[in-house]
Image 1: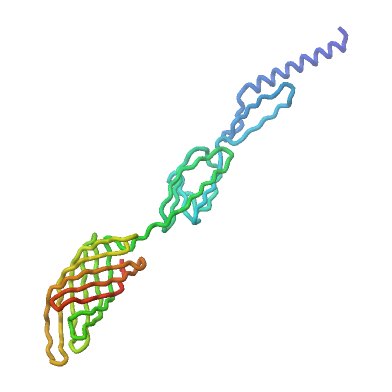
Image 2: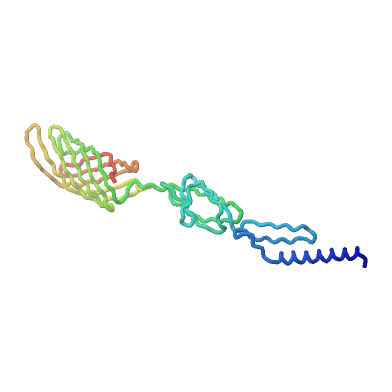
Length: 265
C-alpha cells in the first residue's frame, strides 16, 4: 500500500468517526429554552441539516367592544380597557367578562393558540332603565281643583315615600279667594307598577284631610276635617321626574290634582 492509499484510508476513517459522534449527539434531546420547544425534521440523506424552534404555547389576544372603553376581566382578573392587546398569553381556554357603566355585563370564553393572535369582540347591551322602584322618596308640586273653597283651585306641595310598594304621603294645599283655606292631608296606599320599563304606577289611597278655613265675607274661621279617598296615577318622564295626577273623593265631592314629581333619593 503506497502513501497515497494510506492517506485516503485515514481521511475516510476520520470522516466516519466524526459522523458517528454528531449523530450520537443529535439523538439526545436538546433543550433550548423553557419557552421554546424542540422541533425535529426528517432530513433526506445528503441534505443540509436545519434546526428551527418556535415559542411553546405563547400567543396574543386583541379585545374590542362596542362601545369602546369597557373593563376587561380574564378569569376574574382585571386587565384594562378596550381596545386592549395582551401579548405573551399561554395557550388554553379562558373566560372573559366585560363591564361598563350603563351596560349589562357580557360574559364569554375564548381560546389562545401558540404563535397566533386571537381576536375577541363583544357588543354590549344597554342596561334597561326602570322608571319606578318598589322603594323611593319623592316630592310633588301640585295644582288642585276641588270643592274645598268657592274658587275651587289651589296650589301646594306633597311629600311621600314608597316602602316595597306601600305608600305614605302628606300634602299641604293652599286655596286663596273668597274663602281662604289650607288643607293638611295624610294618606296611605299600596301601589301597582306596570308597563314596559316599569313606567307607570297606580296607587289607591285613603286618608284624612284637615281644613283650616277663613271666610273673608263672613269673617268666620275655624277647623274641620273629613275622610278622603284618592286614586293616584304616575307616569315616568325621566330618571328624576314623573307626571302625577290624582282623582279625589270626599264629602265635598270629586276633585282633581295634578303635578310634577321629583325624586329625592
